[in-house]
Length: 362
Image (tube, rainbow, N blue to C red; front, side):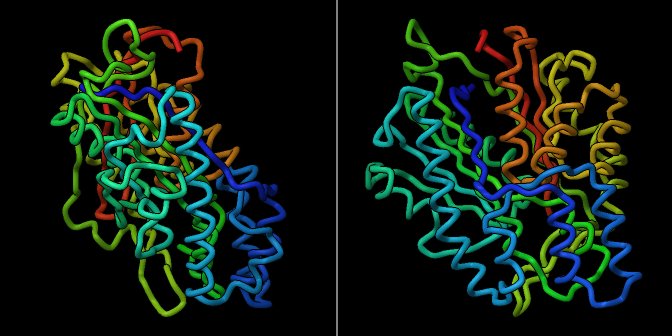
């Protein structure tokens, strides 16, 4: 069982109220058709989002019409945010960049070769023999799946240090002139952000003995692909970049499949839904959170953390659950030994689950 010993959420400096973003995007996504504009305004108002952080100043987006230009911004800004997040997480853990043995980078909003993880090595002063795993395509599930894959690595390298870093710059995928309902919804939900998590194996000094750090132990993980849902969520990659694929069927997939998967993971550890004290559910939007709440028969307060995160920063894709993890980490009400379940959904449709246990007061 690996241990999470630090998490560092990071946001871009450009922050705007939802109404300001709606006003600018309304002119970019819709024509002079007052009906389409009214739909966009209504959809944005219903997202539950109050503010969002953006990679660029808001007045730069009208001129962002090229996939190449947007991706150039992604590489530069994502690398900077990733560096900030990893430095902060390592500092909290009392570790140096040279201590990192395994680095997993996940994003679904930009691409580069060399990948961002490779660019981080020299900037951070990591060892040149650090093992790296860049990931693209997990979508919003990338934060949860990334934790699980680092845990897998540390199961076989129990004295080592692994770092997960997620960066999502959703605003850079803006598709001008696309007034499809999927794009109108996405343009009101997604924000930009990053996070890094430091994890150590069982036999690392930060996990055992007098030098052990407080944090969360990974008890178990699970992944699920739901058949016949490939066209429900994802990207359509075209000359203008990443065009969102998002259908109204996603909440139904969650309602029909999630409960069995969560129950199966909990039963492996003699736990039931009622035993879980923290639900860290990807803040995908009000309908997604409602579907999770209904599927698991949770009370209204169970997903309050996710709803607050959605309001404050929007849907941060793969970084969302890592920001929730940081919020939960700072919560004084969680007792040592209390279980938490982290859940995120991605293209496929896929669900990734991580069962955690708090080790001590943090």
